[in-house]
Length: 233
Image 1: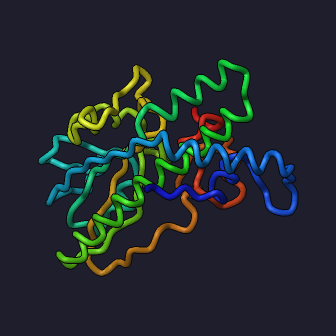
Image 2: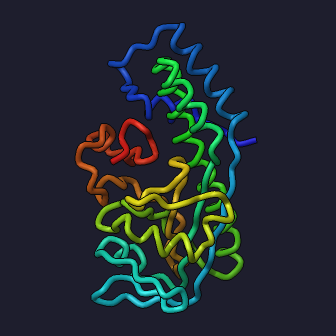
Image 3: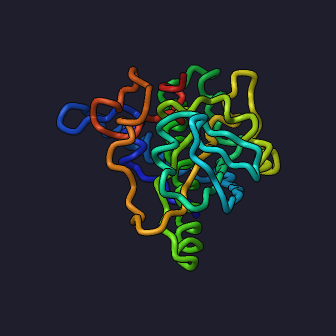
């Protein structure tokens, strides 16, 4: 069963230590919707590994995939990578359907909590996949970079269209909207590099590479909650 971190759910809800106060009833409600959310998860992942990439003035070129990842940030991340892995993860549509039902019933607190559960859950699904990739990389003498997602920094969401075809995202139920967003919303496209000599250490401040200046999490030096309904662009 997928683990959902209550502390992360609280973070998505805007909890700030020493300043945010939740009543006992609200904390009980949060516990309830974490438990409910877990029953609604349909986690699924897919990925493809490519054995060659080039860093050019266009960005990161993956010739085998016919894909260019534009931007300085992704180029810097993959500058020492020998391989690159494109990953997709989702928790499926059931949780989002329940969130929509709650909002339509004017149960805004419940809907917001459950949405936050989904935000943490999809990150956990992607993290589990990355742990599997880490083991695969280790057997081949590689370490992994941290996971970089479309929409971070200067990597535009437009890459989602070719990305989806390359990893066959539709096979796990992920579709692309007209605005290049992912559907279900609680889905992730990520890029991971296989490097030699670098350690599997996650970046300490993803906000330094993210352009979401209005994110509530940015000033706290934490990864922005782009998968949260309350902070989506």
